[in-house]
Length: 119
Image 1 (tube, rainbow, N blue to C red):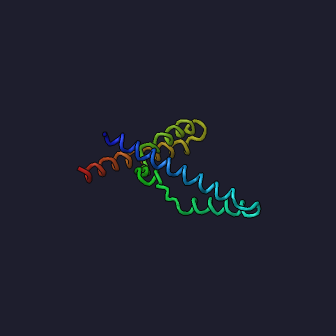
Image 2 (tube, helix red, strand yellow):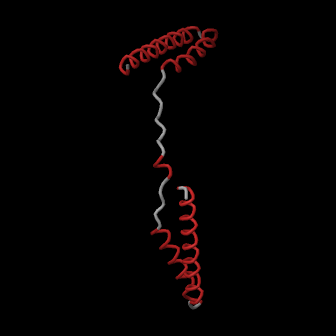
Image 3 (cartoon, rainbow, N blue to C red):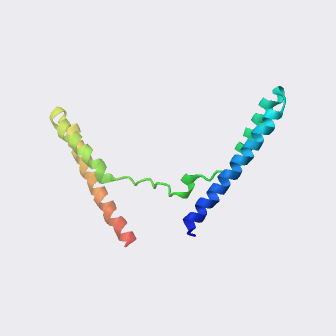
């Protein structure tokens, strides 16, 4: 029998046993007096909630790594803002052009220096 077949058979056995035990718990609770049924039901649910171990699927996957700050990418919108502002208020537009050039140079420098470290 294949490994998948064995897993399916084990899963079916576990489901059957779980269903049998759940029906036994239900029968026991239903046989109790009317006043005790709600308390017993809450007790059964609390025990199941507290005792059953659930494996967190997110813990097994790799967490996404946050990206680094991209100076070159920030320089593009600053440059575009400078294109608009140079016509509306030239000194601010020129400052935006300078800031865009500075961030682009920092971005290129960061790329060159980071590749030198990993190589």
